[in-house]
Length: 98
Image: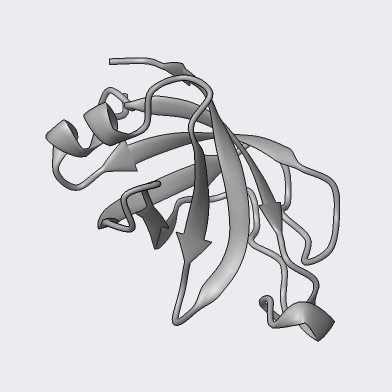
């Protein structure tokens, strides 16, 4: 059983040629930071439903924040950045889970 996740999001990784990651994020827990529209960085674990490939299609993911109150910065429809030693992708909140 896993901890209650906070968000359902859609993520897209930037192509490696655009400054993105050089390798895919597999279907497994991945620790990163999400950047809110107010430019605040929040520690999070993402759980992709499929492999996130740089420059590839958007993938639905669930998000678990280190600090649960971070979810309030990402209401449904929010656009945000994925930060991993620089901007590596972007996403949209599809729904709040808890």
